Length: 116
Image 1: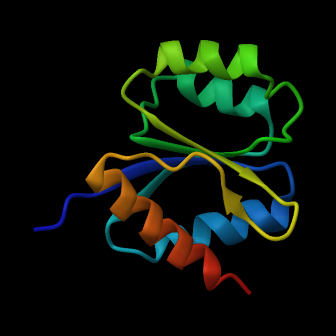
Image 2: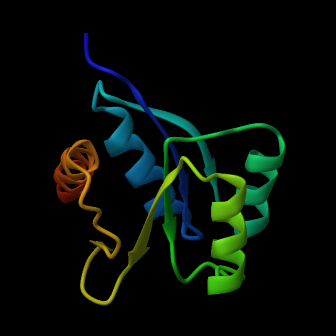
């Protein structure tokens, strides 16, 4: 049986938020725990007890500065954080060297590649 990976997605543009969440949720290995359209909504999810294995967020969210990201990471030390940017399409900037996380990254990139 395949392990389900619990994910939170944070993106300020609604169409991208819905598209990313929908694409990822179609993968049987991924469970979308929650979505947030702002940094405040993301913090609200975390404060209400959500502990995702993966946090996928837009690096250009207002208040998503290095200090706030570092503080969030102290609250979720076990969570893998992927920061998205859009210079030319969606790019995951933080690729990690742990094998199962590389596989997750490939799965996420493949899912995002199929966005409409």
